[in-house]
Image (cartoon, rainbow, N blue to C red):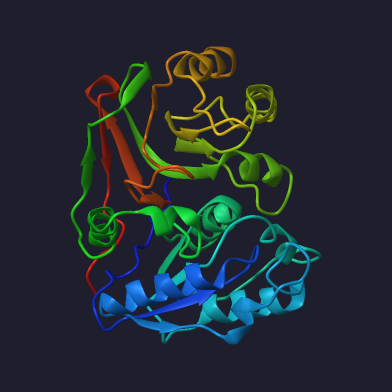
Length: 307
């Protein structure tokens, strides 16, 4: 892949973070607690009262959520865009038409889970790095310690790459580097053969999943393989995987998926502490990552750059 990906500018005190709610509704108290946390770090917060809307299992109507998202993406007066919660609803905003924004300003756009297709699509279409990271009104962000939050925000405010060696498990040894794509497995599977589907050729793929039993994970891996999405990867990174009871999916099961569906020679590293259970690192969708030391080291390129 020869695309030159643009990075957003690093986040600093005084910058404005806009918050929108394109997916499921959330607990107001959790949201307000996170707003207080962000303001205490010196950031200005911008959000419309419509973030609190509810319509069945969605955070308001499709029309309103789409309008809020498009405006926020195109706004040049803000430096970052965060989301309240995942769940479901983002993909509905692309029906019956694609979300097209000319000259999308490069800013920090951070989300996960339901936002996976959007992060990948924006990175691919606009040649920019988006960020796989926590939503602010979810239980994950609320449960992070002060030290963990400091570590995450440090990644948003420095040009330094991040080196990860702790806890990594090598499923298939080897070295690789490339553009990082991916996120939630279910959402990537749901994107196949839609306008949100993008090529991953020669890229490094990151996958995580929560509350899915092994046979469903097997089925999703199988569909990705049959669709030709796994055959030309440079490497595979696996984050949190848990079943419907909340139990951690065993590394032996994940290894069986790799052996069954990935061609030989593609290095695979698991136990990346990223997903619905952990968020030790932010990941640059559309940014460079490198698997070194035969899988015992992961180097994450900087998410941001100075103006």
